[in-house]
Image (tube, rainbow, N blue to C red; front, top):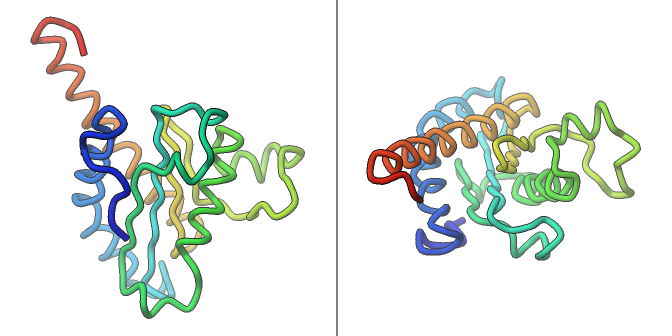
Length: 165
């Protein structure tokens, strides 16, 4: 699935996200090639736009970038749908799915997917699905950390050029 927005949208956030996913894709592909990680060698990642208010736009409009890794035509399950469900729960609650499911189950609603795999950190929400849930969580966290590092680098550069964004 192509990225939803180009680098000019959402204050240019799609560019760093796409760059991070491009860098991570070989790692993810290598990991999901292992049957012990992903029986269907599948992965779908949904990155939510941190520049929009969660209560200000519909969930679908807040998706910044999506990426599938693996042969999507061969998937027997709807991993994109599962990634969306995880992202929707994390987006609604502003928290990682593991935290909501395991530590705050009173926040769950009918139809919520009870599987970890969406991470909320540094203002980002990223969901992944296709592997065992602990790997989904790891791939989501890796995405967040690489994007955050890229943006922190840009902030450091901006500081040396006068200190404004």
